[in-house]
Length: 137
Image (cartoon, rainbow, N blue to C red; front, top):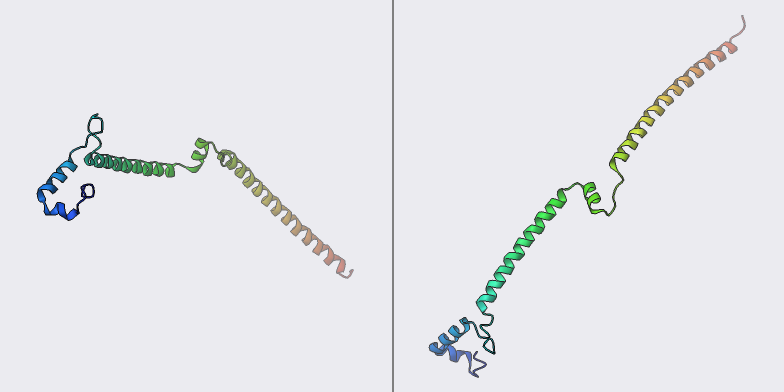
């Protein structure tokens, strides 16, 4: 304001009556050229800023809540819902694991039987070798 009046700012502070008028004029909403009504005032801009800040805070809180919910959903369910692929069906994998575990048990039993047969064959072989090595008589 002081620049537009071509005076120093201190001039306004030395003349309190002028300073009061300047502050009163700044508080009033200015009119739009052409007489179409009041233009945007500082108070309305501050109110808009406060409203925008409040909306930003609400949206940030909502994003945090949604992120929390998303982190709580099991991973495979998210893969299926989103449709971007993911692990094979867990039921198929569980069935395959069960089949392989049964095969392991069967092979371990077979290995144990073969080990027993090998031990018996070795014992028979030792006995036969002992009979062959004995002097006749």
